[in-house]
Image (cartoon, rainbow, N blue to C red; front, top):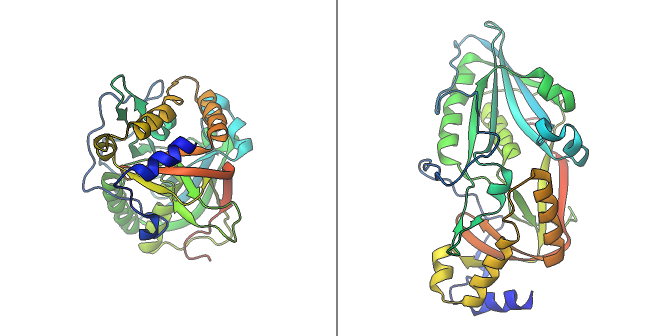
Length: 322
């Protein structure tokens, strides 16, 4: 760890962290870049039965649309309820047109599987390639069996067709500008009374929260009796130190730092069983107690502190319900 800390303070382009206001805001893009052909989803393709890119259902303005919160354990197709016992949950939103009786599901998740969004590929030439795009999948129907078997479907509001169409326009814009997945939330402490958030996650739950905010903006009135919890995968760190983007790191000629970053990510190159990957990653974080964190195309050094990594599952009220 000492060599990593030392190498950080040697780098000339380090910016003092007192220049930042925490949390660092997520940086949107002006348009979605093409996904690198190197990046592959693996056994489960992204949105295999979904609608064409940038297409959304259209509702008649006077239609009544029921809105549902959808929740199930991550990777329930492979592990059933297992990850639900640890509150590692996947979120989506469902819609039902009461006139047509047609249902729709919307989920925002990783294009190339979760582990690929969490750690980069270390290529033979020593460079790092990130496969960390996320996107919105929209498809016909709500699979009641899939969501209800280990999770739930909960009605949260009703909106008009006109309100839905406004929300659909927001969804298209959001999908084209908020494109990069971020697994981790980074805090200074596990004590909720003293917490400072350094970085916020950007994942399926984040999209649902943004979607509910957008629905509220177009006039949705949410049911205050519904209580929803959301999963966060947290890292706990002393104040993060900005290193720079990859080009700056390479151009610095600081070989100690370059080797440290490559060595750190080399640990996470195994691409096999999903659960095995994350158990190994969890173990390595405890052993190393340090982390090279990637956010908005910049690398940060995290000196971790207890409890190092933890899963939280907190209630976040629906918009307008307090």
